[in-house]
Length: 129
Image 1 (cartoon, rainbow, N blue to C red):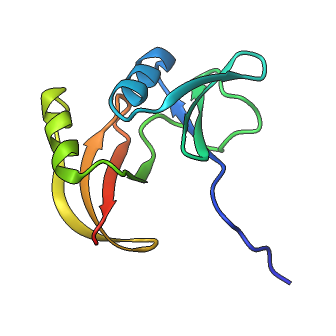
Image 2: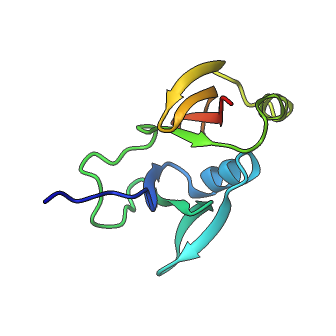
Image 3: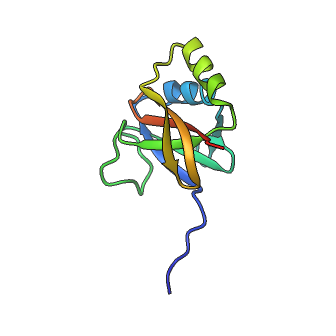
C-alpha cells in the first residue's frame, strides 16, 4: 500500500512581519487575509492557503529550521502574462527573471519571478497554451 496525495491544502510561511507579508500578498497577488483559531493569520487563494508564522512566535509543531525567505514557490494565475508584468511594473515590484518558459506540474508554463518582503522567490505563471 502507498498513500495517494491529491493536492496541497496549505503551506506555512515563516515571516519577519505579519502585516508587511499580508499587505504584499493581498495587494499584489490578490490573496485574502484570514484569521482562524486563536487569532492566527493566513492568506487564502483558490482552494489553498498560506498559514503565517511570525519568526520567534511559530505555532507548534513547526518545521525544524523554520526561517523567513526559505521558500521557492510557483503560483498559477489566470491573469494574462502581459497584464501581470504591467501590474508588477506599475507597483514597482522588480521582476527578477522572465518571462521565461518552464515546465510545470501540468505542462509548459510561462513565468516571471519576484521576491516577497522576506525574499522568498515567487514564480507567477500562466499555462502556455
